[in-house]
Image (tube, rainbow, N blue to C red; front, side, top):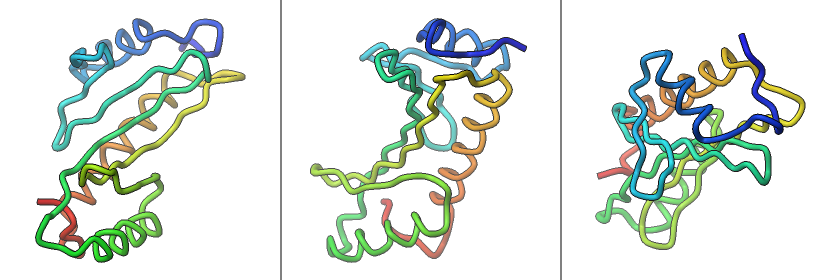
Length: 133
């Protein structure tokens, strides 16, 4: 298993790894990697910071007050091992960063992405939260 580090990190490398493990990666309109799961997950390779950002955006439930959305987002942060925030245009952004400086194995990358997808799926189907339309 190869090591991903700051010297070899690239979109092509990450895309090829995801393709090799049958995760069906695509390129979005910005050239970032897109995984179409229960919710779209963007894999953004940031060579300057030697990191890979995992991101999923949900549309905010407009029937909720903004304070309710913020409170539910905070509860999600307490229950799931990912970052979250409310965007200016009414979406809820879920993120996780993988820093590769010093090296990350391909296996660790895949497991981390799969865990992020599982968390996003759980949030999207958790009946305790109604922040998404």
